[in-house]
Image (cartoon, rainbow, N blue to C red; front, side, top):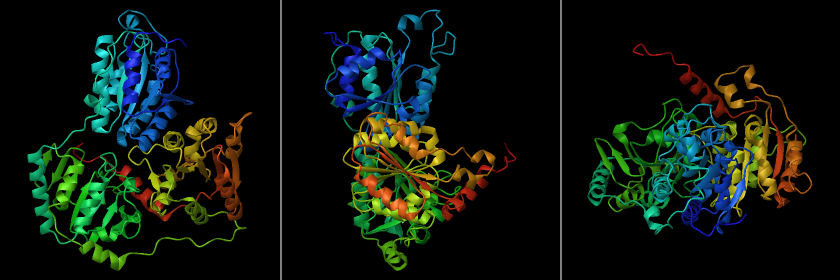
Length: 566
């Protein structure tokens, strides 16, 4: 490839991606984006990671954003982007700033009567943009080179401010067009701050409400990390000396070794008696919470509006009040300066706090059970581990894992897409290569996206995959069973090793007993040159009691008859 000397739209986009901190971007090439990919490749601080398909590409970018804060995926028009939109919907739901960049037809064709390939065969070339507008917080199309700087900067800034994905459409002839060089990056990345008067009044009202309560409880939600408000949250917890619980999709945001940590708050699926301390509390102080049908056990879990303060990225909701332009971390930090100690929940929790869950070792010669599998996975988790829990019973097993200081936890509960974990973990491991990335994934989920293991082999990523083979979609079985929940079995260990070809170092192993699992884990920990997949036997009916209870609740919620006024 030979780089033109003039500065172009492609150069501008590449430079801005680098300036906002992106190092690796994820790509699937197609003829509408090839020239743009050249310009991204020219940039000395950017490196591309190829993916097997566009769904995986979007999920890999989502995982990179989890570890790195922001990411980019580059795909082709229509046949690529429409597939990627699934993962972009997940990034929106999970509050992750992913920049989806799509190639597009030549601008001369867009304004002509031509019928083009990779389209639906009509003269409408806007359908992709129409979809993007509903899945992102900013969607722009670069149809004129002189508009590119303004549109690119706008999209990137919205991704950063709103912690959501954005969409940039680049026609195939636009990357080569001359373009001014970018101005200071501060115009894009400068953070928003609170309106001072609103911040003061919001914290005054909140402090007064807390002073009138007797048993306040701190509740961390899934938006806390995206807001960068973890330290401010803990500052308030320290000022109150109140117990701290987390929603299931916020597990890992607060250290589980923190002295006031009281578990995952999830109704019947709670850990460490968090549900009991929630029942004891008379007031909740939330940060970035989301109560959907999954996290509320069919809307049966959660505080009532009159006993609940919740802060979002840039607004605060209190009983009888709404304050806009109040930033979450600034609200929590300022509120900490105005409250006094209210430790009734900690006093009560000291009384009811259970011992940490520990499974007794099973007979190493017997068939592997879920409890023995989880006991041994627990032994793999150290302070440098990131544990991925795939949609399914891995959610509930993951909740019960004890995370040592420094350990992290990733889950996708709002979007709830089976197959998410493998490509997302690829992106995460690219962004955080010094961490140990561990995946718990079921066989049904794995079959959707398992080919992305090939990229882990290519990049020599020592990811450990515990493939829990229970012959079907166990989570669906517990919600509503039928023959469609049974799937064809694969030889997953052989599938893993098939990606080695002539140069790979991946290992595919099988464990049917506790003894075999212990041996496989030792091999996995020693393999530093590629991923290791351990196919673990698990009987279909050997699942957590929490999944059974939750599945029944979700099934009942889904089955509600239409109301009379509909």
